[in-house]
Length: 382
Image 1 (cartoon, rainbow, N blue to C red):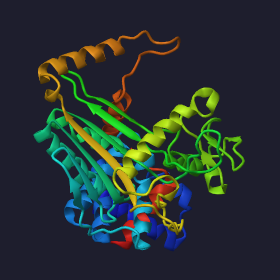
Image 2 (image 1 turned 180 degrees about the horizontal axis):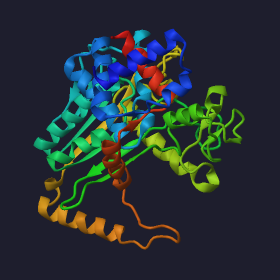
Image 3 (image 1 turned 30 degrees about the vertical axis):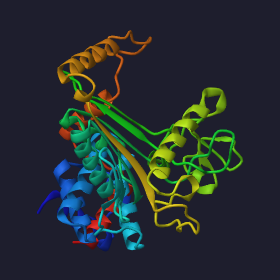
Image 4 (image 1 turned 90 degrees about the horizontal axis):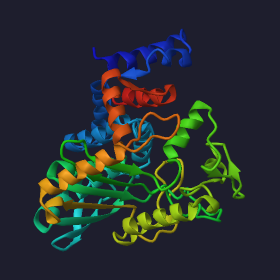
């Protein structure tokens, strides 16, 4: 019996025999090896009706989030996908296809797929176009939440390309000086290859915090820093659950005095590239990515949107020259003098890579409530 099967059976035995409190039971089993979670998750997606290939891709992307310390986009999302599937709002047997294209661009219809499936197809297509034309750009509509943007940007690295990925998201973000929730957290990722050093990988939301991280803070009973969220009147709040009571996430910067208008601009750019280019819903019309919120009665496009890019570095200069200069860039910024009390200066991607090494060695830690959701769904699919 594998570790996952043991946990599922023990969990239900404990409940049925009423011998163990759920909270104390969970804290005994918070660590999982990568392969254990992989087997459980892939089994869930196969049980939902995904093909073997799609189940593998979805599982790999969700676990990539866990490995890079981005648990807000990892196992937490399994329940969201499962509930959307139960509500018949996700297509697990999609016909993801091209609806418009040129030699270097394409628009893809995700056919209501799990967003990870549509995104993986689209990024592969951008890479294929870049191989022929020097760069490739793909806009995707009729999709859903696609996990971490950095996964798709990194796909370009093994082809000696720079990768770009972005997506719009649930409208939980109020523009600067507003209380209306019009934008999502709208992340963007860029991955740039280097020579002797690991790649530069920037993967960030255009807000101070992602919805999933707020959800985790709420589950832990924690408060969030001032400047991350606001209440329904637009006043600063430290309640991570305030968005469930009419509040909103604020743009990167927190308020206008601290540059939130710039975060607002970045979020708007991602929204336009992801939706207006593709024909997806923009801003407040983006469909909710959780089943407990009803679909919107009004729409201006199809589903949620993404945008992907791939650029061959030898389309600009020789690979050898580019990588040598990128190595020099990395050395220069890593050599920056640390501020008082700090040991070193990081470049984008350093912390996530170090977390991945540690987590692969020590295991993936799940919050008790997330573990409960995962095991419950796994039990349904035996």
